[in-house]
Image 1 (cartoon, chains in turn cyan, blue, red, orange):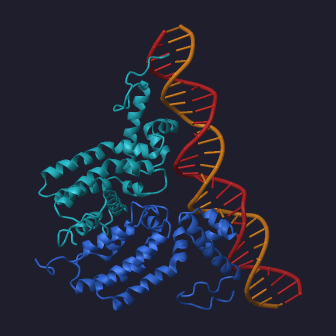
Image 2 (tube, chains in turn yellow, cyan, brown, purple):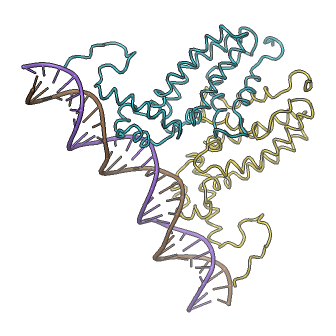
Image 3 (tube, rainbow over the protein chains, first blue to last red):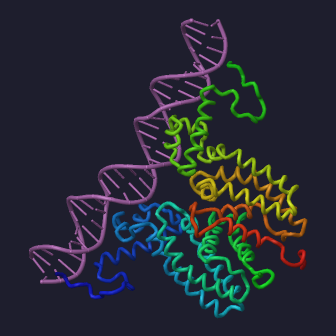
Length: 204
Length: 204
DNA sequence: TGACAAAGCGGAACGTTGCTCCGTATCGTC
DNA sequence: GACGATACGGAGCAACGTTCCGCTTTGTCA
């Protein structure tokens, strides 16, 4: 029996107990994928990423069984940063709604600067389901917290779900990148305006 | 010299001066495409549409050089109906904003009942550019008219472009069809609420 | 009616992509 | 140094979009 893997429990550091070349390849792949995503979008052919990394396609599929896994891995840090910014903004901003607005700005920035990410996230085909899941699982609770705070402060009506709002915002961000006729930020701002409580606290 | 085509000018009825079998095939194709779109979405493989129609693929490409041409042809009537509803609603509704809201409802209904149409319309790949162009060219002026009327009535702020609004609405309609967690209509309603003039007429 | 050219048709063929599978090379260990 | 486990590479398959060209159908004219 080979020496059993030392860590019996969770997998906070997923790169343990793997062969050295495998770990190297994983890093190489992440770098290559990030580079290709910038130039060709997250829909870039797997072959292209493999070529950029100088590995075979089998290697990609072994490390990242679905395309979504690769995308998630590449952008994990940024999603994490966005998630962590939520509570901080809530503590620092003038009001919960202001915090929500700033947080949404962060989220939108993230989406629009990643060519095709928003498109991919909304797509119901192409094996992006996992991506969808991860991003949303991580960010929805953060959004919900901001939303709840704004509701408690009577700044917005209580009948909007965080998941729905985030998908709406994500949707608004799909489209060509530098289109001067369509600015996702303006539309998102409109959406947030619509969220805002106008008149009485909550009505009969 | 063969008999010169009789009609020298425009082409309001495009099906003239074509061979009888070609005209028949064009109709067959439209029916087949409509049927396939319902079951498989507008992204259905060309081969599938050809098979449904009982024709070769060359025939499809001859009649509809791009997929967008086919989609446009299939949904032309509905787009037309939507366009024509604009002025009527404006005349009948209680206020310009109410008319706008009703018209947007129509538009959203159209998008969400056509599996994948919204997705396709926003896509920047797949040769859907023409689709994008036609739908928008036809509907944007209608939307602009409604928007202008609402601005004149001081119901909304004057700084939103029809094209941008329509793309935003279209984007909000992207996504899986029967997802209980995401209702495009709710998000569109929120967007319209954000459009609404809240306080003073427009002041500095 | 028959013949003939133009118009239209079908689908084979090519390029691209996603994904799998297995013979081979590399690594870690004894 | 040897040996098993692990990982790698890329050939191969299927699905799709699109083109291209030999064959068929149609309309016309004598």
